[in-house]
Length: 323
Image (cartoon, rainbow, N blue to C red):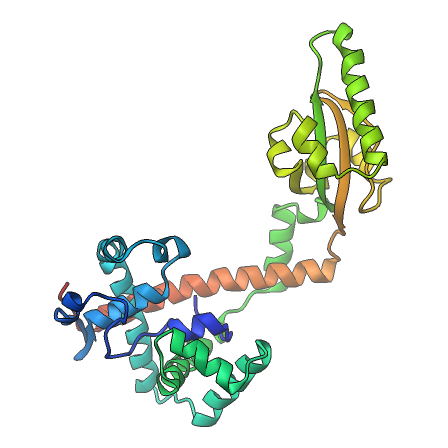
C-alpha cells in the first residue's frame, strides 16, 4: 500500500536505486554484484536488492551476525525482488504518462519531515549518513516516493468511490452500533472454590488484597502476586474489551466507576473478582463511525484495484529474472 505520507524512516529506505554496494556486506560479496532482473530494459542489480532487504530488516535480523543475516537475505531474495520490480514498474508507468515531481515539491517534503521530527539540516544529514545515504541520494528516493504517491492518487485512489448506502449496510451487517463503550481494565481473580467450606478463605484473601489496595499498593503488582487468572503475568491487564462482550456483573460494576478507581470484590461464575478501570473509551458518534467505515471500505477497495493494476502492468512488461 502506497500512501502520501512522509514517514522519515520509510522515506529513507523504501526505494532502492543506489548503485553502490551495501556497506556492511563482506568484501567477498562485493565482487559478486550482478544484474538480478531486467524490467523493460532497465536493470536491477544485486546490490540494489540487498540494500532494500537491509533497509527493511527487522531488529531481530539486524541482531544476527553477518553470515546469519546474509543467509536470511538469501532465503528471501525472490520475495523482495518481486517488490522491487513492482516499484520499478510504477515509476516507469508514471514517467510514461508524463507525471513529474518538481524540485520544489521535494524540498517542501523535506522541510515537512524536518518540522515533524524537529530535525536541523545537520541532524537530517547525520541520520542519512547512518543509513549509508548522501543527501542527493535521499532527495532522489524521496522524489520517487512522491512520484508514485501522486501517480497512485491519480490512477486509482481518486477513482475509488464508497456510497453512503454501502457504509450504512456495513454498519448494520456488522452490528457496530450495538457495541457500546470500550473499557481497558485490569483484574485480580480468585478462582471459584470447589465447595462452600473454601468460600470463606477466598473472601478473606480478597479482603487482604483490598486492604493493601486501600493502603496504596500497586494494583498490577498485587495482580501478579495474587491473581489466579492468566492475565496475572501482565499485571492483570485484560486489554480493551467492548461492553457487548462483557458479563453483566462487569458492566454493572464498571458503569459506576471512574478511571483510576478499583472495585469491591464481586462474584461471577469464574470466581471472585477485583477490577480497576484504566480507561473508558466512549462509543463513537454516528458521524465519526460512518467516516471511519468509509475510510476502511475505501482502503480495501483501493488495495483490490491496486493489485489488479499491478498485475496488468506485469502482464504488459518484459521482465527477466536472473537470480
